[in-house]
Image (tube, rainbow, N blue to C red; front, top):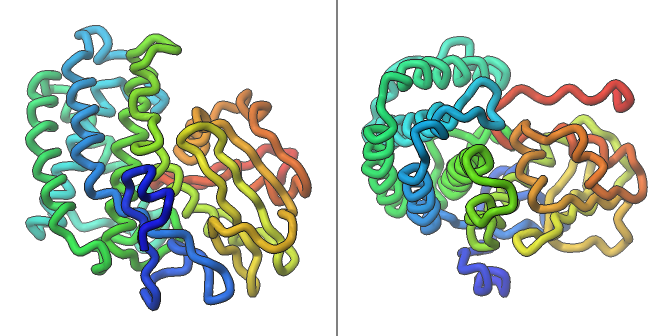
Length: 325
């Protein structure tokens, strides 16, 4: 069904009774309300239009600026985004997988394999001019957008969303995962080339474009908290403050953690509030240590700590500070 938020955000959110999907992605059982599925294929062309406009405005010297991705310049991130377009079309549309993953039968092994693939491409793409790179990005982004639009969102995806703990995912979640990649890498470029406080730094932080990113990122939390014990019905309330934010609840239910947007009957055990300008960085391995002071926590601090180890990109888990071990 369409929710009120869906109408306001122009983002399609549906809840389908009886849909058989992974608990990690959707959270919940019959006793815990599932979060709506957010379908973002229609947003892909919009976020890519913003990206192409941004890249065509970058000055020659700004292409070489460092970014929040260690060791990667603006041009390196753009090259990575081109690579993900090409890989998506090659593997998912054309059925051509090229290189077979080695030692990728575990999460850590898959991360190492993807890190090597990414590094190989970025290194080779340093030979490509910014103009050629942007032209190819524009062409392939249109093709990927058309491909996503034609997919059945409830069919099985070719790859699981591993950072959410899934061994099998549906297309809607795979597309949402890819959308978060496009959004957060573009935002990294914006922070590198735009003056702080200028409209360019917040152009894609609208509710329409950014809220679905947050909604997807939060689905990493059941896996993040999997080894965190708590009494039955314990609840962590996570609020992202700001126009694009929202409220989510992580509930302890039948020995596991479930994500929901429905408030539990009892008050939350722990409450965490994080500003929207920092929330995406928390999930993408770029959260500055000094920003921890900007996050408000109330209640059981032990249940707030795992949130800061959350990862919603294919990366190794973060090491907690010594005080939290």
